[in-house]
Amino acid sequence: MAFNILDAAKSFITPDLLGKAAAYLGESESSVGRAVSGLVPASLLGITQKAETGGASMIMDLARQAMNSGMLGNLSNAFSSGGGGIPDSSPGLLSSLFGDKVGGIANAIAQFAGIKGSSAASLLGSIAPMVLGFLGKHSVENGLSASGLSSLLSSQKSSFLNAMPAGLNLTSLLGIGGSPAKPATGYVEEPKKSGSWLMPILLGLAAVALLLYIFKGCDGTKKEEVAVTEHISNPVPDPTPAGSVPIREALKVKLVDGTEIDAYKGGIEDRLVACLNDTACVAGKDQWFDFDNLNFETGSAILTAESIAQVRNIVAILKAYPAAKIKIGGYTDKVGNDEDNKKLSQERADAVLTEILKEGANKPQLVGAEGYGEELAKVVETASDEERRVDRRISVQLREK
Image (cartoon, rainbow, N blue to C red; front, side):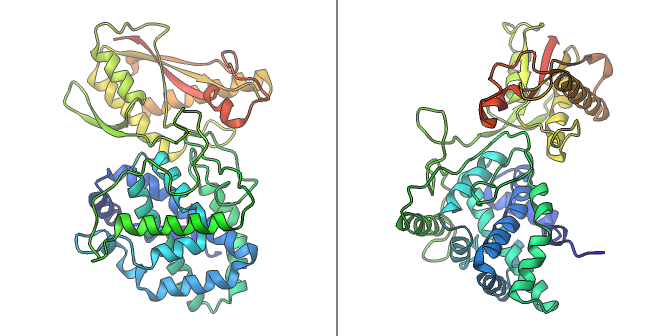
């Protein structure tokens, strides 16, 4: 069986490690796991891209440097009370790998996973060196040259691309084109550069300095967590007046039965429970709530693994509010054939309903599922993929409460 780089790299991410990282960063374990699920393939893609664009020797040097640092054997210690956070060598490694993209990548991960920007940067500063250290170890054990390692990475590049979670688009930031299109919940696109050779260098140095300042004091101790509300690198385009990408605020939504579920402020759980608790919020055919953390494999009705958490939250809400009844609605944008869109939207609505039942929902609370295709789509077919994203969704209709 061919050696699988991605699976081997993931084997270093143990449940114990995720638990320690979550506790150290003050984040939920599920959110940290979500961030890491994107960071591992993103790190491999960044390394592969650098190797393919004339940096094979540099990647080999960085990989051996990371291996010799002992990072692989001390990964969990980085997130212990005496571990001190990210390794001292991380800022230099990150700058060599990603240049001025460090801040943009951290911000994209933070938005995708619903964690603080500082937490995302800290995870990036640990996961990327871990991946490099693993590659260095594999190269030494198997006698790979720089070109041999580069060839191995290139041969598995498509698997790294396919492993990127739906809703996390870092390919433009990593300088990679032609990635599989996935429904996005947090699309980030790198802004066009001015063409100046000096600006990327200055931004890269600023990113590294800020990362080091946030997480490592001059005495090696952990600094107070600082939420990144301004981008470390170039600002990411956004339609909001402030022109910055907001980081989603994670919160605990408390249900009437005492259960608490992890959600996002303004997300489907937050809004649905608020309506259920508010006597002025009337259930009916016009009361819809869009899923905000649910995606499918490209062009299919197969839910991604990351989507199950939100499905389970809906099940928990139904159990806490036994009088509630819901219907699932599926929608597409205007791209493609009308009939095909209708069929796909129905299949996806059915898939969500089936998953809700599978996770233990009470069947009488489920009115059914209906695919509306592009019938209610508002954005023109010629608009950008990001603009059309609002028309591609799965929603919950609160029929009774």
